[in-house]
Image (cartoon, rainbow, N blue to C red):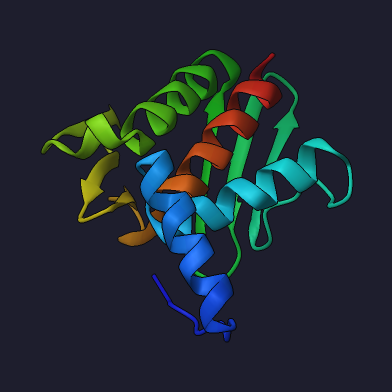
Amino acid sequence: MSSYTVALAPERFAQLKNLAALEGSSLADTLAGFLDEAIAAKRLPDELPGWKVERVGGNVLLTHAASGFAKLVPAAEAKMLGEEFLRFAQPAGRRAATLDLDTMTEIRRQGAGVLIRDANSFVEHTLAANVAADIGRRLIRAAA
């Protein structure tokens, strides 16, 4: 995962840090919450740059352009996959765990994030937990 620097006035940083502490979350998750609120209020499009989740007939296609990750799964499996993304994205999901979706796909916790790997292509991508949760919701929605 890449990280970026955001310049905030010291007073604003202190407020953000206090809010994160009150909510029991990280600074990154607190900022992600602001983005989620903007999406819910329709001030920001419900998109996840770089990721695409789309229904293709009775299947759901999950792709990440930058890493080359692509997985086409039946809709029922996409729903289960989405639920697993949500589970692995939860703070309680930080325990060591691995999900083999089929013999060629793996999801597991990696540090504070979630790793998805396609053993056919050896393509893997590590996601921030809040991004994994976004993908999970999109998979469930596309599978419906």
